Image (cartoon, rainbow, N blue to C red; front, side, top):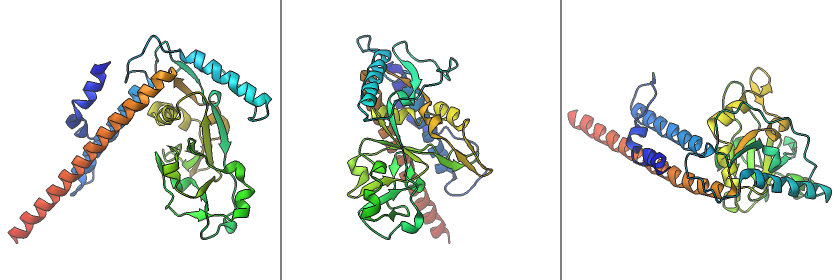
Length: 305
């Protein structure tokens, strides 16, 4: 298993130069091409993570099937107590999955491990200029980013008290449900924490959902929900108008994902964080090299005049 990681870490310069043909020209072209290589490296890391190829399996880990049975029992008990809605009858798990997984893993639907909360249809005329109660809309979410300063809108304390069911909580995964037809500009996810949320109370707008996972790592789920082939199958299910694409809550509920044993989920999260940090360092180095090249070019041109 270590060899897989070595392939990534020992060949970062190769990945950074793995470029796609582009018709654009100009100063930034080389830099953009190299950043494309890093983008593909990030996709590879996620792909290896959700296929069980990034970290070793431990035969002593409790199998994912046992973990999911425990979660199902807990959700059933919570439903009987009236604390969550009963889980709907699920459609059968597909026998045609996009890739294989280790024996200790299991394919299952998102609803098995998540309580899914929809957003509130806030009326724009009721938005106010500022308060301690901010509404999070589609434009506030990008992959792993909660952009509180992007066209912020707020509601009154009274409206906030009347929509407590849409209050965003630390540890939830936010997911966007609407985007542009034939583009991959939705199904963005961000795992929120107190640092990302700031000091205000945040409320979920319509066409967004918040996922509260049970019994599994929310950080692992946030990784799995970004893997290209798992996203492909969701994009294929989108509906909408000529220009707009939508994913419904039922499609999200039945999203089929690969679940590792819990201990392995934690190992995957740690390894992905380590490798993504290396990608960030690589991007920083590429950008610095690009700036150095620009300054050098400017100096040469200036001296030639």
